[in-house]
Amino acid sequence: MLNEVYDIVVVGAGPAGLSFACSMADNDLKVLVIEKSPFKVISKPSPDGREIALTHNSLKILKKIGVWDFIEDSEVSPLKEAKVFDGESDSLLSFDTNKSSIEALGYLVPNYLIRLALFKKASQIENVTIQYDISVVDVKTNPSNANIVLSNGMVIKSKLIVAADSRFSEIRRKMGIPSMMKDFSKVMIVTRVSHENSHNQTALECFKYGYTLALLPLNGNVSSVVLTVSTDQSEEILNMDNEKFCDFASEGFNNKLGAIKQIGDRHSYPLVGVFSQKLRATRFALIGDAAVGMHPVTAHGFNLGLRSQDILSNSINKALNSGADIGSDNLLREYENKQIYLSKLMYFGTNGIVSLFTNDDAKVKKIRQLVLKFANRFPPVKSLITKHLTESKKSNLIPF
Image (cartoon, rainbow, N blue to C red; front, side, top):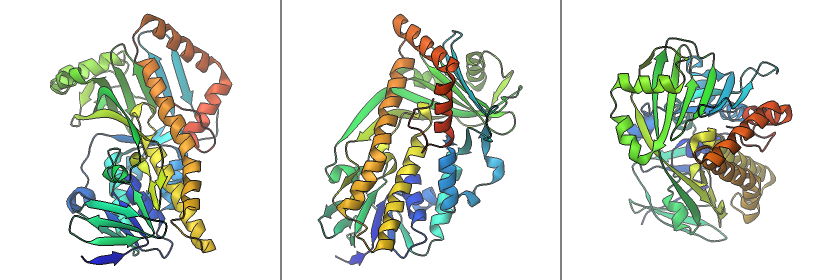
């Protein structure tokens, strides 16, 4: 077998894997990214209907690693206000920027454009090599080094392996790291629409009885509609003609947007959450969805994954500056300790929100209406959640 040596091997060229590779641009480490998808899939990602709600901290990270310059300003939609509704009741929780110095609660950017920007930046980095259409067959690690065997027979030796190969990570399983998986038995359906009335850069989250409907405001009178329904209802929604679907969405938003027209394809995604019980093993670390795969209701899965690679890359660069081992147990333990608490809080907190706001029992409905009213009328709560929306390092609360 042909052997090659790298300092770090990253498994997965999705957002987490490529952002980590970009974070390695200013050092002398030799980095290899392994991706099982073909080159054309990664180099020319197709629109997938998903809009990423970036926190201010995520924006800082993308700027720091040189990725933000590859995203056109016209594709960035500021989020000025967010409102959460419960069914047809008058319960409401709202957040806005009116009484603060911040420009926006966050920024909406199409997922495929973030992926494209990450690819463009990573492809320019001299010390990063990306291999496509290849998978990991086996992995072995010990206190002194790590080896992976690829599907082409090549054996790669390295100091550290970083797994970023999705919430269904094969390499996580190969390394014996247990994970908890939760099938929500729901499907998320997304599409872009235009509408007659302005959204005023306001996001809406409507917990209807039997389904959840959200609106993400894009530039102009355009929005992304996100509908979450039970799996057995999804085919009916996906097969609706455009006029009926738009009428359904318009009624869900109480016709406040005026006439709605679908202008994008409908995409669907089954909702499955994953939580890895450890984020590290010997010379091995998990980042992104391979570490934690979130339910999208809080819109923070991407932000959590970006934060994970930022913490790990900062620890590695710190170790390089001091001459320490970049794959040592001490370094990986430091990374895990910094990331796992927020990961637990976000994952289980989000699942709790999902359970509370998708349960149609009469007593539960009453509880969530009281929760929304209390949170909306108690300024300290709203202030802390807003801080989390804008600067995720300042607060550990879970925003909607």
